[in-house]
Image 1 (cartoon, rainbow, N blue to C red):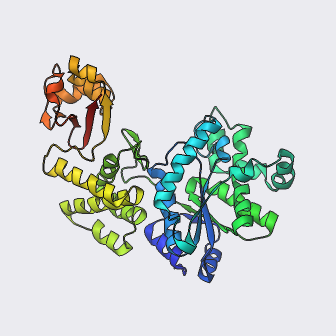
Image 2: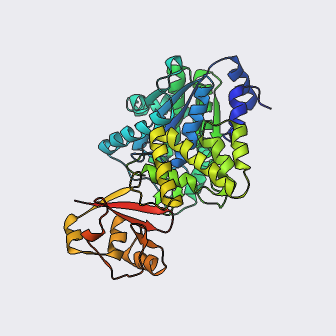
Image 3: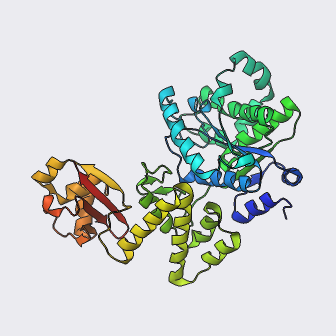
Length: 415
């Protein structure tokens, strides 16, 4: 049994997969606050649900009185992490990197507290030190401590070497730079713990070893499990794609609904990982019998949406969902929106085309199948005529509500 409160709760919530030295870390955590970090590369202008485990891990560590650092990878993004990827990432321009950094910084600030007095979180960009490195200096002072044989043994590297594309020399340097980040944060902030997903284990271990060799200090690594749902699907993926934390990429209603649609077997696990509710309360909710488990799913959806967006946004999404699904009302507030051409509406839009153009379905053919199957609705009224023309007569309060089945809805505006 762990002795430190942080590791006790992290274990109970399901955050711990591997630790480089469990007993050593447990002892140090008991002695007082430590500094720990997780890195987030700006590969897109928003993080997605897959990154939420890491954000909640920082949130939990901060709750226990420790100093947390969210490091954004403005430097490492120029190379790209090859870990377990089938092919190399496309190189991004500095303009794209800067745009992405702004987006993920907002995601991080929503979940981790940067205004908590003496326990404020810190956000740093590794471009601050990586861009200043001289290549010769890096080779002589840092590269000497890395064994190519050992790097080739990492699962993240072997998975790429087994494929036709292989691993470029550029990508091969990523682990070295991530290790250098740990050393730099140790020097600047006394950081002794790096955390991340289990796919980062090899890179984290390399960083632990580099700090030991160059600074003569003991530091630690901790990884959280990479999550899949009970059905084996990758966490945070839907038929529509990734579930983003940015409301512009994933409307709050869709975000809330994603959690509401959690499989019964995952409710307890997700409550522990993605909410601040006490562990015992999470277990009580997960044990609700029969249809009562749906109430637990609503609590999960509202709690996660509150953390990632706001209490007001979460309550609005819950209200919209309740009125849409339970009361059968023509709800407009809180639903995702899309804008189409006003001229098209005046001329008349084939019903299958408006479904495809709105993005609710992927193609005209899929829209036709939806209509034939009885799953299409306009303003909550079932549509069974593929040849129906949608005109201004279908406007309700200046919008048209499209529905695909019971759970997928969108509001179409025109301008």
